[in-house]
Length: 114
Image 1 (cartoon, rainbow, N blue to C red):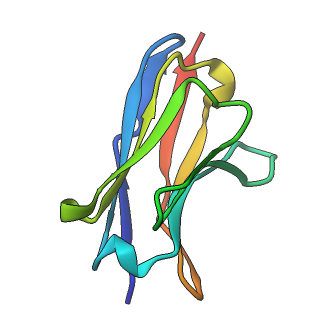
Image 2 (image 1 turned 90 degrees about the vertical axis):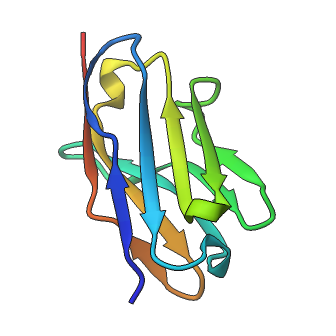
């Protein structure tokens, strides 16, 4: 049973920074890709950032230049460093992993105050 456990969400003022962590049960190289999605109230879940096993990166246009996805393979953990946060970044952030099946974490709330 794959488990993804997120941590690091919270309340921050606009312009501030947060780092989200996602710890996976088992090796992260068992997944084709891992990353982060977010969902704000009344909106669809959207991609934030993805990193593939080969190390390819993909970011949503809204976060390019402000967010950085990375991984620590020895810890089976993927991170999302978020800087220059804006109120519109307020969402529940979900860790995502995929091999032949998609897996999701429970979500962590990020709130950015103006």
